[in-house]
Length: 264
Image (tube, rainbow, N blue to C red; front, side):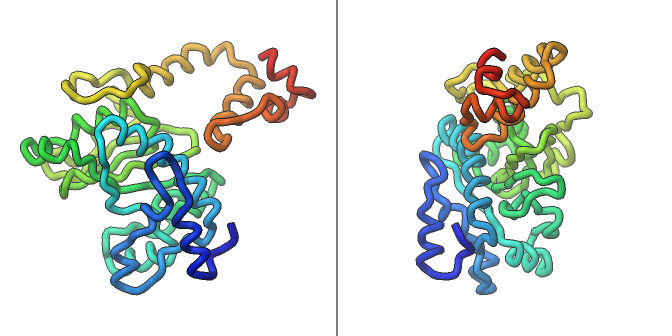
């Protein structure tokens, strides 16, 4: 899709279905945009859509499947809107800090896609209001979903949840006064393993496997992976909707034909 130059173009962008439950229009609302009259329109619509699809399919749809309706507080921000929010001190980081964050259509300096959405899990609101504790929800997400970072805020237990194609681990941070700072990050002993003792009575996803299950499985087989194996895994991970052909896998690993990929 070309850059948006007309109402029809913006309407077409908003009608793009990112996943079973979400359309692109769901992520374009902005109080900053509305109040200051600055359009919140992607500079690179195609990239913004690709990122939105991954956020929805890998993070938001599983959350909504488990907990019911989620509310979107803040999602995509154009560079212009984000910069204005930063200058007006409306809780927006700089554009550079939001590259592949709230600014979905800017890649990281290393060339990776990424995006951030601020949401509220309505199912958890009453429990949070009664306890002030965000940690059960945070640990559930950490155990079940491939997030690239969580950041929790006091109002409504709203939190930023990030997706990234960049390799690495997602930390959990909180601005909630009673439990501020890092709950976990890759360097901390509590990062891995299972944290089910934190969220008894929570719903479960249909798959019994968690992110940590997959992580431990890959760590177990890592010594036996060849360069070709790793190249194919990386290509499959980066492919749109995790869908790739044997021919494309072969090309990624440097094999002459798809037969080489099939053998692996």
